[in-house]
Image: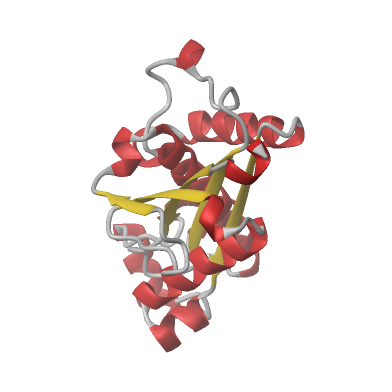
Length: 193
């Protein structure tokens, strides 16, 4: 009986909405038990992914993988590629990423309580959802989703840098840095742009 009433807390965030190249990544982190996100021992170190060093993000990503392996939480990341972004626009691409994540989690919508960062929204079938401005700065489960999305996207760009050398994707991860603009002037657009 209690299992039927159980609600899963899900945090959702994205990474890669602003770059000039590469996919957008959407992550969903699900708390499987009340104890699964006991991160008090690390108080003060969990932050929005943009406020953490790459090393700290990687450490938190490994923590997420350990908790997933032990069954204390689940997380999924959906990467929506640049061709889809160009075709349907970034807002709809992010919505598609959210839908893909929730579909992969395969949880009954009525048992889900979803917290989303910024202006994100889950499909309307998920009635218990709340969008929180600066949620990635305030809500731990959204912070974890922020980290998962950022790490997976950054790893993808590092791999793609081998396929498209000269652009510096391994450094700027597709964002519009001065070096990226210099590479664009020199090489032109890549298929990732």
